[in-house]
Amino acid sequence: MTVSDSGPTSTPLQVTPRLRVPVDDTDHVRGPADAPVTVVQYGDFQCRYCGAAHRNLTEALRQRADVVRLVYRHFPIANVHPYAEAAAEVAEAAGRRGRFWQMHDWLYEHQDQLDPVHLSLGVEQLGLPADEVGAEVERQAHADRVRRDFVGGIRSGVNGTPTLFVNEVRHEGGYDLPELLVAVDAVAGA
Image (tube, rainbow, N blue to C red; front, side, top):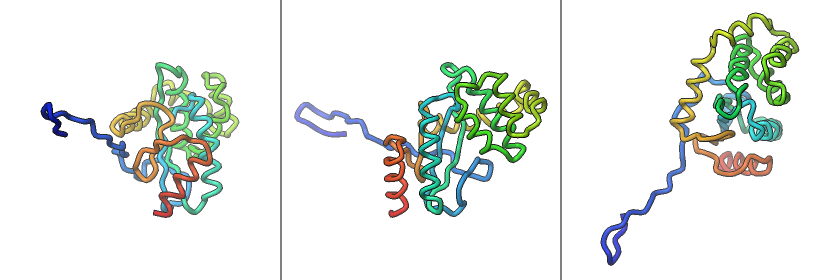
């Protein structure tokens, strides 16, 4: 609240959104557990911007292998991306079998092939049981997990994808490689 000659006026406070759901052992994590920098991504497998971010995050992890770990959380925007929820559930089904990151990578590398037929082919390419995974997706066996990530994103102020948090603070910059490396290095050096 500020005071002027015409009486009190209010000014909006700028608050940087923070991650409201801490990283825990149920999250999908890539990189060293003791890394000084944790990047949490809320993503949608059908979002082309997430596809671009995926390539850059993968490279940032490669270049800062001992410094950063990546946590992936689902934020399928189903009203724009009709295959996003099924893709998230396929990733969870693969994760149940210890293959989350392989499926994650396949989904981002084949974003234009996320319809049910191609998803089934992707599952087979990774050597997973397509019938079992298909049945799990059909009965929405992993919908609660996907929904939990989505709701956690909403609580953290996520309103689009990709949204990144670096050590629990929302990354307001872009997701091209130089910007990601600057953000990681700034937090690592702090």
